[in-house]
Length: 213
Length: 213
Image 1 (tube, rainbow over the protein chains, first blue to last red):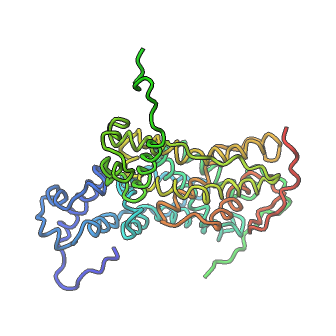
Image 2: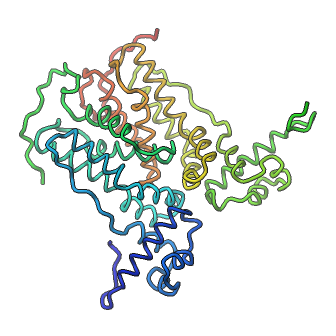
Image 3: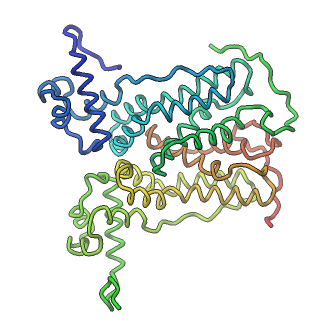
């Protein structure tokens, strides 16, 4: 995405796509350490020369493969805040099993290689926090949630639980985790009073937070 | 009756300790894939023969090294629920930087090797959730927090945020994250709103906590 591409002769994007796809597949299958440029070239049916000309070393190839554009679902807008949050979480679950597996193949390298870590963070992880944050900020602008909450932190809650579940617990992220985190962590943090913390004594805020910026 | 161990000749536990320590050090320095039994033997000044006799392959050696006893701090009991939770989080931060680094060296292997994953989970991760859970359950028993909360999930919040911070964001877990997660996620979820949601780190008093039952 943000790789400065030399002006002039356009790259053969079909070959690029095949090479980056092969790189992703091998990261999933064997992980970073066991991936080699030779294996990627063989898998994609391309010459090593082609590959080295585009990405001079494995690290750069992997950074490109991880950062390859991946569709992020549109910000959910169902009319219900809870349903929107559930939709964000389900997008993480359903849409991108591939991202989780890619991440698993990169984890150790991420601890040692800053370029790989940044590419993995931006290409695989941050999008989902951004999706939650978009829903939360819209709700804040509409006065649906209390002002003064740490929305950035709350937006990261589901991604953090999901990542921990996959990597440390070795389990998939499923509907049970989705509803549990949204209903028992996220919703109670953002919804004024409506979830049973009745006697706050504060009026629910209505409406008037002006748009920022 | 034969045990697996030669009768009358106890293992040399000092050698074991040195070998497991060398294994941990190399996991931190080079990660699982680049660790070899030869390197561990050289680092510990032991013979390869000794090492292979105790742990026939790398995976078993790593499982033993990861599961080597590590002190868990006692359950904090300061008299203040917030301070106890902060102490749990700080134990994670201060006491066990080594665990985080070890974990980083194991992550990719954890995705492929069930024995390594389980050893890492139990040896490096689960303890901290258990520490938070002990504090939360004690508070629930004392009636300090609302009944019916998902304490197991809430106990995992700080460990999940911390793990995500280290692995995905590549940043250390610091006092800012400690107070942010405890004051803006954990405390608002558990405290009946006498503490308000004013979570700026200035401790709203959690009131007098009576002695436990």
